Length: 395
Image (tube, rainbow, N blue to C red):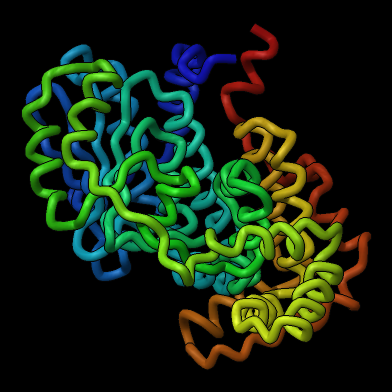
């Protein structure tokens, strides 16, 4: 189905969903997303700079309401999103999510992800052109709320990553869809290691649509403010005026795609590690050693879940990926089989000792039954991610 054909079904569904979360603390909620009204566009500014614009419930609720209202407004031709400070968005506010879990608010932790996933789908089916200015950190959920849109402008300050395996989670919010469509097995590499790409690399592999030096962002913003159109081709032509040309340097992973494909095309995480160890022994390549170090730091359970998720994503639509990923996340939040998410956040973001105690502690201890459990449908007491596309099948 065409990405814009779901519009009418989406509207009432999402409006009802997010009205329920409307907070009485309106001023606080509004401050998390600032708005600029322009000639025929609106700019949403993610405004939690002290935490790299991390996504929480109030921010996502307001963002969703704004996008719904703009899509219905004939005076709004297109929408722009950017971040305050030195980041676009570092993803979900995982420290606060961990706090919810520690306090027993498991459902609250799941709702944060439910809102991020739902917004990613809304953006994917959005009727109007969308421009995301990725001038800074763009990780996890930050990629989720930008990549499904029409245009993504990377800069020399862009830092893209899906570091979820390093915190006991999995590439989520649509990441298994986007990663699985990158060249070769680059998606498996990025998803398992959590390695970073710069702005030039995101353009080269297709995650970004444009690249400009950060010093030109103000010019781009001014151009967009004065643009009166709802035509993506007009926006495209305007953005091209500010495009800078650059190429990945010789240390880029994109210069090692033969090695990436050779190692990360293997069927299992264990075989990927064996391939990297073999290449490291033969070539003494520091890149192989670096990749191995990242894999051996990550949660063993997360590695196996993530590899399967990305592989399944190759054959699924975005909505199917989001529904599956929410199952995985819901199981991670419940901590019934493993508390790796809480432990990973503790080690990297709270205590910052970088010595997580994973459970299970090694790949050998992660059974197929464990992995299968994460992918199985949720029970009736744990609601699945309910996207409009599921309802449309019966209309």
